[in-house]
Amino acid sequence: MNLGKVLKYEAFRQAMEGRKELPIHNKDIMTVIDFSLASTEKRLVVLDLAHKRVLFNTLVAHGKNSGENYAVNFSNQQESLKSSLGFFTTENTYNGENGYSLVLNGLEEGINDNAKARYVVMHGADYCSTGTIASLGRLGKSYGCPAVPREFAGPIINTIKDGTLLFIYADNSEYLTKTHLIHQPNILMAQFQKRPPAFDHEG
Image (cartoon, rainbow, N blue to C red; front, side):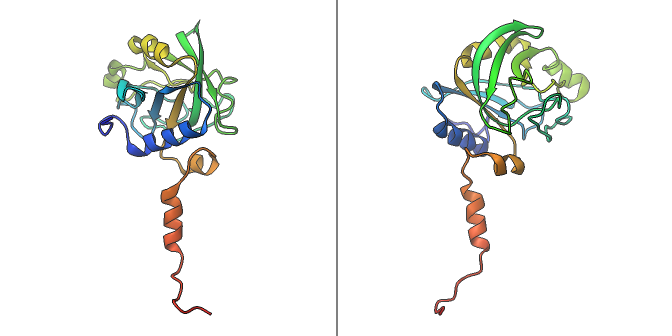
């Protein structure tokens, strides 16, 4: 898919691991948000896996208490105003105080399963724009929602609604210790290599 310029391999690998494990209604469309990148970078990617195409690659905001230009703190708690990591499935749309919005259902217990209760949804926001980056040096921040530029909110939401997978990635060891959806072959291999060598003639 020639994703090298738009998506890190590790973010894609982890997203595909979860995709294999989860009973997702529509596996052809997958969204990956890479919060290891700065908010000034296009860190949301929507993929059409069936046709091997990148449908969208744009800016996305993180939660107010997750960090400044980088998202470094994550939470599943009410009123934390932080983003959550992990796997979500998209559900229905509605028009709320932030306009056209998409309900997200967190699929990982203790990691993001409070997303609905926290009203963590995808929506458009004026503070998610190149103009905000020009004035602040970073994007504005949400209350925990993955907010996207106003002009892309409708097209993205209409593409990924009704049962597609969304994965929010960060280079975060705490998440990897909690999730049951991602295998960690590199970590296991590193642990194996640290073991002292066995003698040829033990016993």
